[in-house]
Image 1: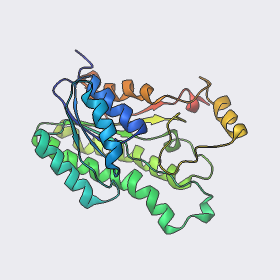
Image 2: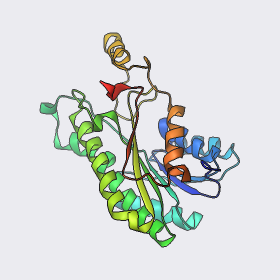
Image 3: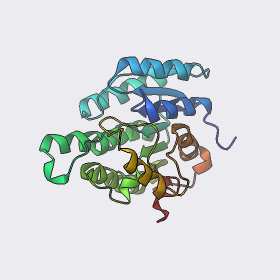
Image 4: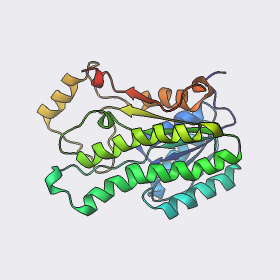
Length: 252
């Protein structure tokens, strides 16, 4: 079947809750065994229960997506457990909203270390495993903020613009190894990430909805289809692409 992930082994970062949980369960529903990582063990175990309910295996490996040492440990443990890694979903993400003039070095590093450095070193570590086994698919969670700037989240905008160029750069370098590298870019979702300001206020929320042609925030489950597509053989001739999943936000 074109979209089947049967027999595939996937690693999902930021897999403890929200979008990561939905993606881990979604990959399992399409046949993949899934490893999940994040910093919070209790949340990972909740996701693992949901993944296992699909009949697929779930390997839980806590780790810090901002630490290269932790990244290498997580990837090594996952490869040892499954024997290989066919799919990486870079999903861990944080934000630290504030005016650009108010960022401290720690604020900036908090966002970039997870959202960009972490993505790169997860991709690098997994690519080494994939090369040894004939290739695979790397899919990263970017954002509309990689294409259009949103006020007062400049570090986040910068990180996601970097993810988009990272996607193209790695796709170019690793195509010869049978590794496809793509990203997907959500707009405003019902599920929030660490550090996001959940309460934008009624007027700001209405402005978000008014700017979105479909007139609502996206649901976490609406990212499963795009990610399964990019991870599966259905996208076997797709690499270096950033797929907008934004309710039409970037149309105008």
